[in-house]
Image (cartoon, rainbow, N blue to C red; front, side):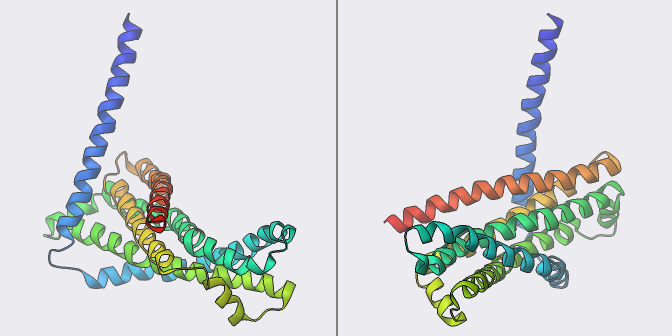
Length: 264
C-alpha cells in the first residue's frame, strides 16, 4: 500500500512539474514580446550578438553545407541514372537544399553551437548571481541578456540558412561538373528553374522560426538554471535537445502548410 501511494505521489508530482514548466515557459515567451518593443533597445548588444552567432558560425556552416551538397548529389545520381534522368539532378538538388536541407542543417548546427552557448553563458551568470547584480544596478537583465540574444538568432539564422543553401548548391555543382563538365551558370539556372517564390518564402519563414526557437529555448534554460555549476551543464544540454526537438516539429508543420498552399 505504501509503495502504491509513493508511485502515485511521484506520478502526480511529475505531472505538476510538467505543467508548471509549461506555464513558466509561456510566461517567459510572453515577457519577451512585451519587452522587445520597449526602450532601451540595446542595438549595440544586438549587433555584437549577431557577430558572435553569425560570423563565428560561418566556417562550420560553409564546410557543412558544401559537404551536404556533394554527398546528396553522389547519393542521388545512381537513382536518376537508372531512369536516364541525370539532367534533372540540378533541379532535384536545388529543391531539396532550398526547401529543406539548407534551413534544417543550419538550424541543427546552430542549435548545438549557439543554443548550448547561450544556455551555458546565461546559466553561469545565473548561478554566480550576476543577473541579480544587474537588477541591483538598475539594469533590466531580461531586456539586456535575453531579448538581444533572441533577436540576434532570429536575424542571423535565416541569413546563415541562405548562405548554407548557396554553398550546398556549390558543392553539388562541383560534383556535377566533375562528371558532366557543365558550367556554373547553367547549373544554377537549372537548379532554380523548379524553385518558386513559395519555396524561398517558406525557407526564410521556417528559418526565422528556427532562429527564434534556438534563442528563446537557450535563454530560458540558462536564465532559469539552478544547482550551481552542475545546473550550467544541464541547462546547455537541455537547450540543445529541446531546440532540436522543436525544430523537427516546426519542420513538419511548415511542410504541411506549404504543401497545403501549393495544393490550392
